[in-house]
Length: 123
Image (tube, rainbow, N blue to C red; front, side, top):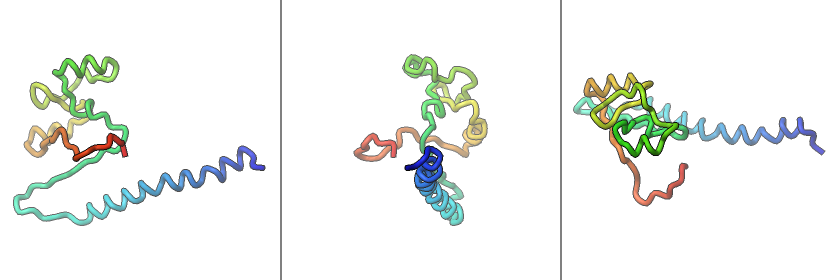
C-alpha cells in the first residue's frame, strides 16, 4: 500500500514529465525558426505571435470606445491608461513598446484572424 508521501513522490512524476514535453517541443521549434532568418527583397519582416492561454485579447487590443465592451466587462475592462491607436482602439498600458513601434509605422495589427470551420477548442 502506498503512503500519501509515496504517491506524491512516484505518482506525480509522469504528470510533470508529460507536461514538460509540449514546452520542450515548442521551445525547439521556436529556436529552429529563430536560427533561420529569411532575407526579404523589401526589408519587411513578418512576426507572428501566438499567445497560448492566459492572454485576454480584449484587454490587449482594447475597444475603449465600444459601449458593449464596457457593459460586458464591468470588472475586467481597462478604463485607465489605454494607449490609443485611433479613436476606437488602444493597447494595454503595459504595451508601451508596441505603441512606439505602431507610432513609428513599424507595426500593423490584423484583427479577426481565424481559420475555416473552427471547432471552438482552445487546443
